[in-house]
Length: 342
Image 1 (tube, rainbow, N blue to C red):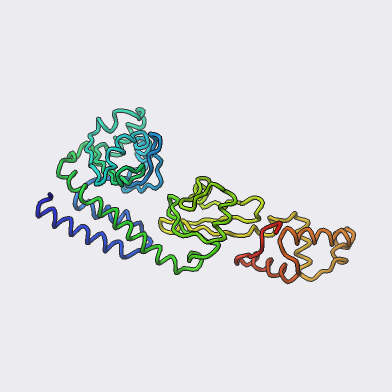
Image 2 (image 1 turned 30 degrees about the vertical axis):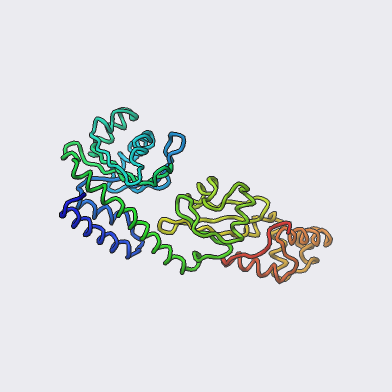
């Protein structure tokens, strides 16, 4: 059991963390929390990451680098990915801290250039601590680093990190929950049938019915708990995902450590050929079929057929709907109309 001095330090640290979490501001919580941790266990740099060990390979879902020299980050992440056995050893019910010196950290898995980058970054010494539910492949890890020229981590450092890590993890969860609660009141993020909110690792917090239906059509194996891998990879890069045959796209953007996904209808100019779009745009502006025929050099019957085809592609049946659709598309408002073919 920790001594009285350590218990008092734990209490003060926990109170400090939860005060930080309650601010729920836009600045990275991890930076503030790790800065507070340096007062308890001095270190030069840190990696705080979550991931899943699958088939002997680590898949990193989320990684936060703190004071990590840019040149050292890539080789260190490479080393982490190649050492799932060390990570698995820390993924017990309460976590186990591992003390590693420079020789153990650099002994294998890195070439000479990567080794030199770590040494230049002065982060050769490492203390690795992980927490995860016992028997599960996922986990959360904190890797603290000191320069080889500095004092080695010792058993007291190991003990402190081991008892403080749960507070780091829990307070980050509190911060996330408060941020998402704040986000739910913002336009464009609040729950709705066309919207979903997920963590950056794809864990679904809520998903509207219309968006869930579209995802299920595109990815029939989807279970509703985590975003499909293909969709998650694009969403993490904030790239739009076209749903072929549905006339819709899924757009994503980041909010703190979450992803906000929105189902949008594909803009009219992307659903129509250039000639069709020009015809419907002029038709919506008031030109009749005869005027459009003279302007385009087509027969009036051909113009009417092209307009009927364009209406079918857009899922509308009146000029009023066309006007509303084009207005919303031009102003950036949500465009609501059925997918093509309905």
